[in-house]
Length: 256
Image (cartoon, rainbow, N blue to C red; front, side, top):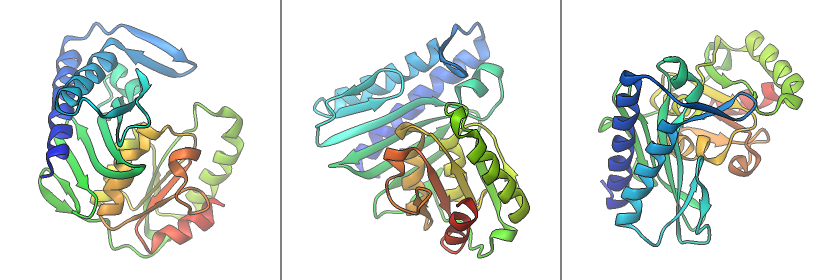
């Protein structure tokens, strides 16, 4: 394992232990950042733990983190962190949330960790070295037909002005694919595409920390990732489409 990925794994597991202890203890202090977007003291504690571990190992690196924002964005390496992707699920005890850590080197994604502390599932990837689930190599499915695909999605709850577009897409997908699933943690959904539990995924209006790690996992597992036009600007636009190589073009066409 690459030394930088090893630090990311250690940081994710530390965050996971904080999350699991809080889930057992209860008594969450929940506040709203904006409509339908929440943060708890656990999000903040987990993020602080991640950044502390990384800074001790790589004090010159930069960060883009959901709760604390950006620092040293011009650094050669930038860590993109979501301490709890699926905070609303976590608040309600719905066991679908994760810690997501992506690392960029000079603007390109190079390492990824998605850790599910409930199932103790650790997804990892390094550019050019493949993707893994608990040290076992993973690949996207070999599915070729959208009509047979199980596709994940997420509701654009932060961008309700795009709800009509999303509903048209959902209507089309429900007519076209085998089934649609919405679990509420985009990073984990993307990891599920990488390991073959889903054949595709799309969502509108995500943040970079929702997508960075999951996108690299899919690419290293043999899948394709893009925006609604199939281009590589999903980190900037927030709109992401991901699927197996054969399903990707037909998924894009259906969503258009």
